[in-house]
Length: 93
Image (cartoon, rainbow, N blue to C red; front, top):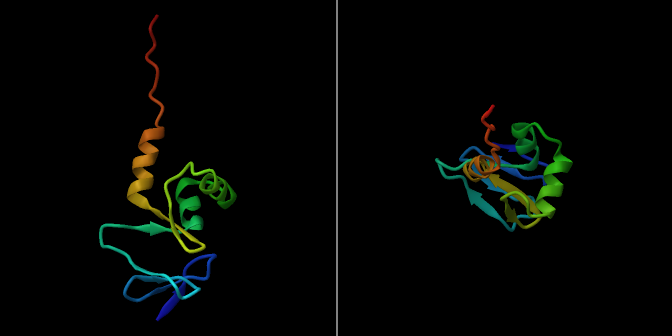
């Protein structure tokens, strides 16, 4: 059983294997590693897909290239987000 995975035409097998539509790439998801496609990441961050596309092309966000397909390691994204955190200023009167 396969189900459509993303805009690249990738599919995910019942065993969690992502197969790139061009047939050249295959990757097994590790149990502790979650890979997201652009649409999933955009939903996770509450952004538009075109924003994710722009950040990828500008190399502003950590990503993995599999041929023409782009994936995002959720643990790397969470670490990257922690680095973007702006601390609250203390009120000194």
